Length: 531
Figure 1: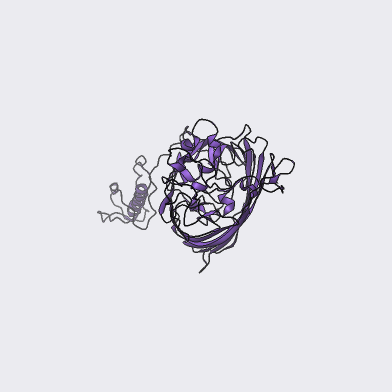
Figure 2: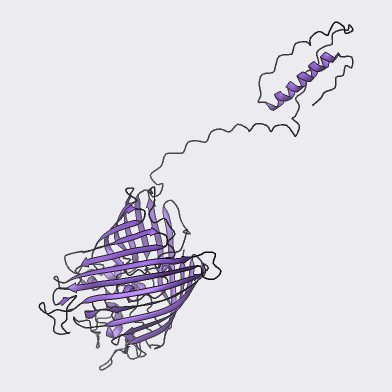
């Protein structure tokens, strides 16, 4: 910036002095505030050759001037340092290991949630809310609207609330607890084959039927994580999840339907690496609230997931699960392999292809039965036992079309001599006491109970196909066709298995028998919401 002097008679040296003072004034205007400078000394004397003149008075102090637009930007204003982070308190959420296990996205696996983020997630609680509603129509159209041989569907030709779950996971520092309620017909359907609840005077079925999961424990930051929990927890046996929203098909094959959905006991989860889990169990029994005998059941899971495109797990069990037969023991091994062999999220039609394979082997030994037994029904002895074994397999193939559509086909086979793991028929064909089956009036033994004696035989098979519409991570519409077959009459026919008119309040009368058939064909539609 230039300033014109009001004294036109100033010498050239005086003008230079004024210019120097003006530039310094501009610099001071851009710098942080400092004490005012001293008055500059008078300009140097002019050369002798210059004409003599009276010395000019010093120019007035220049006013502060703003920097022109093309000069350097002013310095940033002073900012105080950020306060130090407060020390962690006692309720800062669950502690995490440095390398959490199974950190890949395994949402494509059968029996695993595809959700990437919970709707409710705080440092202390992660919520989970489930609604499972279905409509099922059988070709046989039974008059009592009852479905036999499934843990997913129970009512025919009706819109039914299968499962309503409210709960989630609490985590305060290293303390943990999982809660999930169980309302809907599964609260009656799942416990009905648990005869251990009749051992003793307290009614465990009605006490616990509205709880699907309730356990609590502690987490240690060792290895890649160590958890110990006690209560009711899911079993994972048979690959399919108890939560239908997580499965490729709504109705699972026999390998899942006839193996435990839950255990009641103590579970330890050990993660030696971020791709391996070892999980021992000490439980009351095989999907039982109580114990049949003095010994508990023992088991566990080994899960191996070294890469995002594959998963292998093995579940194994040993226990004593027969009333009044303390010498009879049971063993079971369940093994599943999932592989995603094609993955192209940007594909024009098919974006993913995956498959699941599961096989189970098990048996009972002692008190007249053995895995390799050969004696026919009615001729079982310790010396010549009857067969009691469970052999099954199932496989599913799935294709995704974008993220919203998927098609799955699959099926399975099961052989179960002595029928020790069979989902027995209901109503008048139910061989086990069912207090709820007679309107809680009195227990009346059925007139035509289904045969589950040692040495009885059954072979079963199924195949199914369906598609799922998944417009978001929180909703699934499932539509599928399911065929099931059996070597002996087992499924509900048109006449039903409850009474002559299909109502539990109507006496069966002499000579009336349940209408059981060897096959069942049905269409299933399910609405699944998970928040």
